[in-house]
Length: 387
Image (tube, one colour):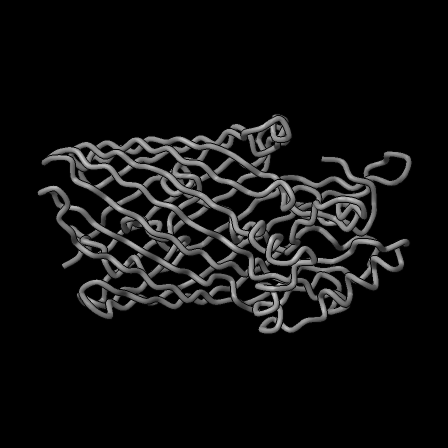
């Protein structure tokens, strides 16, 4: 990718919204945050169900969606690897890699960890005449560890700690831009209750995850301190056993970024926009989280537009083969990202393979860079090897 020498960040180009996007005469007002890869679904099962996973049945990749689910895992240990070729419709060398694992210390105590690595390919800088002046490999990664505790037979809680590194190739002409570093935490709860419906077994589930609650991140030695994508994920799910071999599950998640809503409308100059942005980023992390529930310029109507809704269904035969479908809705004034998804999962002995496919919906998304996104995940049940 060739880019003229300037103070730019590749991720800002690919994934986020610039100040110019906030049209003065438009209702379009998406929320901006840095290191958006933190909220990208990294594995195939949850993404096949529309990015819903906070209240699904536990699996080895629960770390991203809700680490409290690990407390209800049947196996003592497990690990997984996932890969997502990102934005492959327009660029061929961007990939998201993810690895996760867990270990049950005691029947009620489980530790888990994951690493997410976002490789943004090769970035080539050129001068105004097109002459190459340097090559860079921007990347982002996060490393986290969690502890989950089974509080009762139906409820568990978890806390995760996360280190975040974002190196986007800002360092150009010794202009003071550098890689960003931040720390964050997740606080999550999971509820699972056995039921009997029409004579058949069923599981009712609910979950909540406050994720990426942490420090701000800076790329310019503290001149601008940007928000991490702190997020509230709340969901419910139900799994119903049709008979001895067949079961079907359904789940729905509600997501809201705990980041202030920008108000850059009716600004007449770049200077005004710049000053508004500096004021926008001046809020404390705690203050920004609380204000995010009531600071939208359009009032409660706009606040509700900031809630993404995603849901999916999963059919499983004999705990061996699964088929999944999902849908994700993001309001047109907050990014207008609407997509459907589908996927398959196969489990053989101590290994599982899952795949998902995403396709965007609506005329506005026909040429979306996210269209045709594929994810592949491999899971390994290690409980049989641990006494």
